[in-house]
Length: 294
Image (cartoon, rainbow, N blue to C red; front, side, top):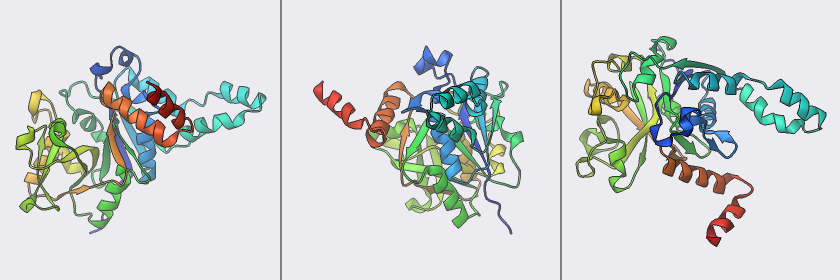
């Protein structure tokens, strides 16, 4: 059998982001910056590194035109002004964005229940039945030379019989209560037996957390349906992957070389931003001095 490699990715930013209000009533959460780039751009660049040719961003009705503008508007007047000032080099980051592969922005299907699985289900008609795809939450960023998207694609290339591959990272203590905990078959690394969404720390089968990076086959849509809501009456991606595993189909894990950060709430966003600045910006030492002075 010939297995196709993924060429499409679904990237989601379709929630209310209520912990960020009031700013997110106007600015999509994934448009918050890390340095001078929005979180969403880091996720898109991760897709590009993995060889993805088309990216489907699932947004809110308010966020859709903002993403369309960011990834398609060439701000020609600014380009001309910079050129007239002899500062054309400052336009290079804009051209970098315009050179990304095809990006399609859609709205989440309002008929679907609330939950992190609904944006993925909304993109179903844009995907191919005979080709796996990446599903990525824009809450999550992975800093490092090789992102989680590339790790997933590499793992699939090694074993294309997998029905799903999930990115994982070990978390400490009660942190596992925020994520889906991985249980392996026979208690050993290998095939996933079960994913348990937001377990109590004492009940978690492992400290290995699944986060918002997945390689999925089209069969996932058998389980991402409105009648399969789970905890808090939400439609969960982890529940759907758990059902794939329990159906007897192969689910594997992959760990990225980089470090995963969540930006899903203001505290963790700040920590991710701080880490990015300290590791990447030329003013990092000034930040260290300012923090030390306090």
